[in-house]
Every structure is written in structure tokens, then in C-alpha cells.
Image 1 (tube, helix red, strand yellow):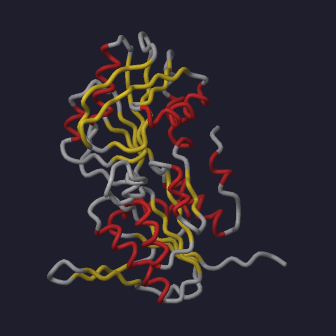
Image 2: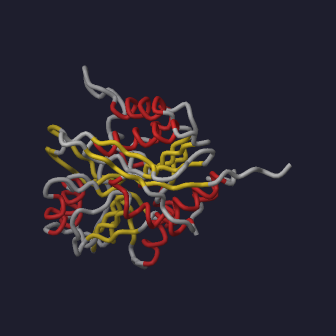
Image 3: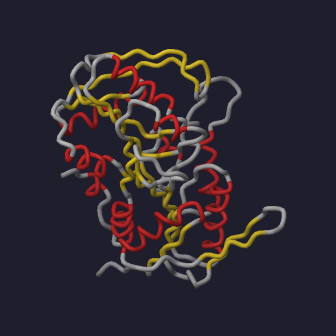
Length: 314
């Protein structure tokens, strides 16, 4: 008996409109219309402007700050379920609060687990996301999680640079596994920057483990927030005699004076994705689109195809 494919409808939250339109275009259909009604006190209510009954609905929204973005996604999920959608998938290019994945000190919340509970309670059937800060967050869900890997976007770009003395670097000990994964694609060496923090977003000291003299360094990270870690690592690496240093970072949070910090740093380039829409452009920031990757993943989910095929790097 042939597989039955339900009609697919794509909708976007207000935080991810630009990327969502690109995903819809790559998928080959228009983005559905959503109306976001607002009350005078700031309260809002999303509503779909077309029927979703019996459809496979994909709701595209990154949950970066403010937390209204998460609340908007939760309410869209609830609206889709109440409108008799057949299957609802949350496409979350950037999964906010992912840095709160464990109790690293007494009396703190595990924010990413709470978000997982909220999404499931809202009625989601499936999660699609990319480069979680901690891969084990997938285990916070008892529903399918498609965890896409941005290396399939970054690796071809790095190869196109034809760097003669490529070395991969991690800006901290926690990112060493990610750096080693990238290094395998290039048969390159790995160096690690060991940092010590006073508190969140404030670095006390940093040292480089490994030889960077004469090398073209590519720092690998998943989130660039204040850009303090990346730019401090870049400066230290250049002081150690590197030929050049650039950084690859999936999610460009770029809070506060991050762009100014990048502009004044020794980074020759910061390569990011469009999982979060940039608030300000910079001559040092290059944005690579994730639209085609997400469109292919949506196609494979709807047609019961393999997601792991999307992890293959040419």
C-alpha cells in the first residue's frame, strides 16, 4: 500500500520571518499567513488565516530573546492543535535557553528542560532544530527530535577558502568535541583555548593549548553571544604567531556591543548562519543560509525519508 502524504503547510513566527520565507521558497510553496493581534498592554494572540485541518503543519520560529518569541511559538502550537492539524512540527533553528542544560550550581533552574516540557504540553508532535548547545537536550523530549548539523553548510565554505595551513580551534574546553568533528573533515590538527570565568559573560583568564605559530586558525563554536570568548581567543592566538584567525559560529546571538567587539578584534571573519536574524550588519560577518537544509528536512519528514542523509558532507 503506498504511503499517504498529508498536505504540508508552513507558518512562521514574527522572529524568524526572513529565514522562513527562504525555507518556503526552497521547499517550493508560499508561507502561510498568521495574524498576530496585540492588546494595549502588550499581550498578543496569534491566529492562522487559513484552515490547517488534517494538515502536517510546520511552525518556524527561533526562540532567542525576548521570551515573547517562545510564548508566540507555544500559542501557535496550541492554535494548530485546536484547529485539528494532523501533525505539528516545531522548526526551531535556534533553541533558546539551551545553555541551561544542567544544574551547575545549587538552586538554579534547568531552563532547556522546562522549555521541552512546555513545547510538549502545548501539543507538539516533533521538534526540528540545529546545533543544540548540548546534544543531550534531545533526551529532554519523549517525542522525535531532528537535530540538524550545520557542518554541512560550514565545511564546504571553509574548503573554498583554500587555507594553506589550516588548524581547527575550540574557544573553550567544552567545545573540544565539536572542534575535533570539524577537524576530521580536513585531517587538521586541533588546538584548545582553556578559559576560566569569573561569572557569566566575563572571562578571568585564557591560555592556548597547542601550537598555532604560522597556522591559519578556524575557531569553532555554536553560540556567539557577547563575542568576548571568540575575540579574546582570536587575540591570544594571533599573539602566539598565527597567520590568520577566523571563527565559525552557528547561532549569532550578538547581544550588547558584540558587533563592535568583533569589528575591533583580530578576527578576519566571523561566519554564522541565519538561524537568528542579524539586527545589524558588519563587514566582518558572513551569513550562510540554512534554508535549503531545513527545506530538505521538512520534505524528508513529510515523505517519511531519512534525516541522517542530510548529515553527509561533500
